[in-house]
Each structure stands twice: as structure tokens, then as C-alpha cells.
Image 1: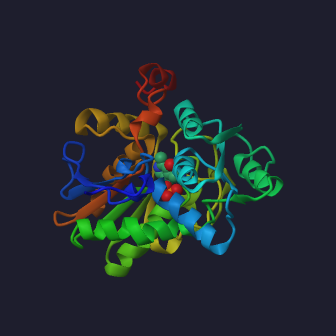
Image 2: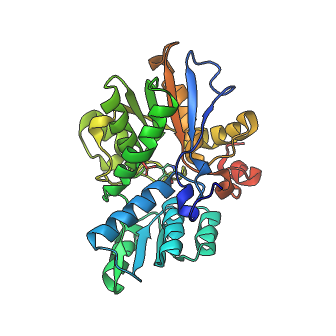
Image 3: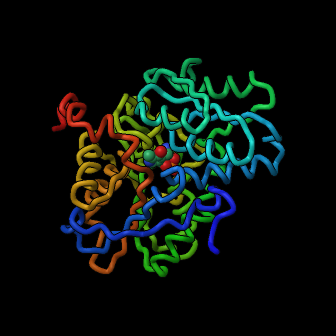
Length: 325
Ligand code: PMP
């Protein structure tokens, strides 16, 4: 008989799938690391479990404790799954930009959800960063996860996602392209791949309204780069400790409109029903076209599932309101 001991045993070992129509103009093979096959429908299950297990080992998270995190939904889902199986209480603090589906899903998974305003500075007491930190201090026996600075996030991808990509491509991967939020995915996978082959190039996909690209290119944290944007999951107005700029060769920025349009194209042209950052990632690959040759194997990682975006990206009325349809 083949079965997992519980749902947490199904995390990881996701498939790799070739992109066909959308990348027809490129000279190279483009493969998607398809992370919606995780039980929480996103890559974040991997790092959620790693962060919890490391906190248990270090004594930060004690039996019967409360896990608190500021999350755009996917990390919350991963943490909620693990919290259920391991007997912890879960509180998610989320910004009001996030889709309603994500909030409802977290509640369905037994999490308490606090919604905070998006358009405030990160150090404003109303921001979701500050609120999560404050709840972590106020609630007894609570552990504030802090996926931005918690290096177990990068470790999860160094230990699992990176080796899987290396093995699935039989060491032939030449480029890795991925959206960057906390930086855990790009830093963990990027470090692992570069250790196997220092010639592998690692590209981050950033949002207009985020600080990463300018910081990588100039070393300057420019507050003028920061303004509200629509694409969910990528870009930041802070520099998380999990972003290891040394393993990143460069960034490309994708517009909100392109991210939305390409998310819809992935569904209609490739049969891939994915989240908003997948559209940004594949558009990022197309923007980087001059870097790829005929022998290259480009791996792009798709973070989460389309079901969380049916009220927005996959809703024609919402797209028309944005002027994108
Ligand atoms: N896409 C989505 C949908 C996400 O939830 C996240 C996580 N914020 C990312 C991309 C970026 O991944 P990472 O945090 O590992 O940089």
C-alpha cells in the first residue's frame, strides 16, 4: 500500500511541465515547476512546515501554542495545514489588497483572520507587519513566524525545491526565473542550483511599486520606488532577510496588466489554472528572451492556484474596471 501518514506527507515532489504555446517565440526549452500540486495549492506549504519544525526544535513554538503570521494567504494556508495536524492555534494577519477567496480559505482551514490596510508604511502600527508582531507579543504562548526574516523559509527551498529542479532537469537547467516576495524561493533554489553549477543564471521577477530591482542595480533602498500595485505575492516595500541578492543575477519588472493578462493566457492557452504571480513569472521569462539560447533549459516556478483569483483576474467585470479587457 502506498499512502502518506497524513496530509503533510504530500508536500513537495511536484511535477515539471513544459510550456508550449506561450513561449513559442523563445529558442529554448521552458519548464514550469508546478507548485499547485502541494496540498495547500501553493509552494508555501514547503516553507511553512520547515519554519514550524525548526521553531519546535529551537523551543520557540511550544505544545498548544498559537502561530501568528502576516501572510498574503498562501503561507497562512501552509501554516494552517501544519497547525491542524500538530495541534496549534493559527492567526493570520492579512492586508486588505488580498482576494476575498484567500481570506475565506484561511477561515475554512480553522484560522482566525485579521485584515489590515495596505496603504500605510510598514512601521505604521496599523500595517499587517506591525499588527502581526504586536499580536505575537500580546498573546500568551504565541510565536510570530515572520516569513520575511525567518531563514527556515530559504532553507526549505534549498533542501527540497532546488534539489527537485536539479534532478528533474538531470542537471541541465541553465536559468531559473521566479517571482520574488519574501525571497525564500529564489534564494533557496538559486543557492542550491549555483552550488551544483555556478553558471546557472537566477532571475527575479519584481513588481512596479517594489524596491528589489533598483536595490539590486544600485544598492539604494529608494522609497520613491514604492507605490500601491495590484499583483499579489511578489514585490515588497522592505528588504526581507530571505532575499539573498548575491545569488540573484538580476530582476525584471512586470506590469499589473501584463501579470493579469498572462495569468489568463496560461489558463486559456496552456490549460494551466494558476495565480497572478504565475502570469508575472511567464511574462518575465518572455522579457528576458535575449538572455536565452537554443541549448538552454529555463525553469520558471509557478507559486499558486487560480481558484484564489476567480473574483479578480478571472472575472471579466473586474478586468474591465481595471481597463485591462
Ligand atoms: N507568488 C505568490 C502567489 C506568493 O504567495 C509568493 C509569496 N509571497 C510569491 C509569489 C513569492 O515567493 P517568495 O516569498 O518565496 O519570494
